[in-house]
Length: 233
Image (cartoon, helix red, strand yellow):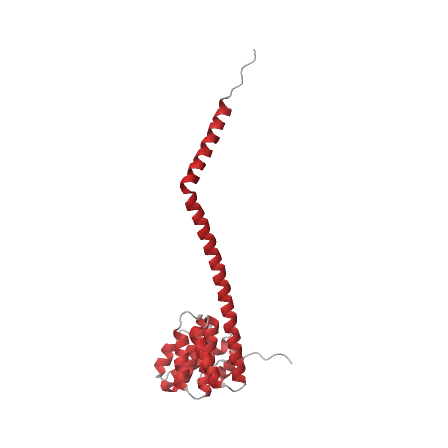
């Protein structure tokens, strides 16, 4: 005799689906407004971010164009007008533009024999932690080069100590000034060893390495192994 079909599983599934629909409906009624508000807020924030990025890019392009115009003015001999524009960009410009403007402003100050302004400008760059470290380190080296004759030898050594190490980007320049300061302190052996280290560092420009070999030799340190290799003829 045929058995009646078991409708238990089918019934349970239908009840389960109905419950889920009811729960979703209740959730939508209770939280729908919040969900819509959240979506709207997300879209508004995303749109605002995209617009802000667009405006930032436009502003950066405008500042680069201004900087290019300044260089044109300098090439034409209009240092006064260029200085005013550089001062503005050095204050309000974006990072790369600001750094370039400040370096150029310091260069003009040096050209005009205004060492006080040049030193202050390099100090400003070196102290600006929002700028990349290579910019700040270079500014410190330039500042020290201008002030070198007025600084105590130990002040030079202490200031440049982080940069006067093999492998650092400005080792050649920082190492040379540190070595001269050591000589002024009577530490000729240490200076000679530093010159030898400069000569051996192949990341240092060849002109500085060749000079380091000669000075190290005069201080009694053999650094000929660090002589730059001459290209084959």
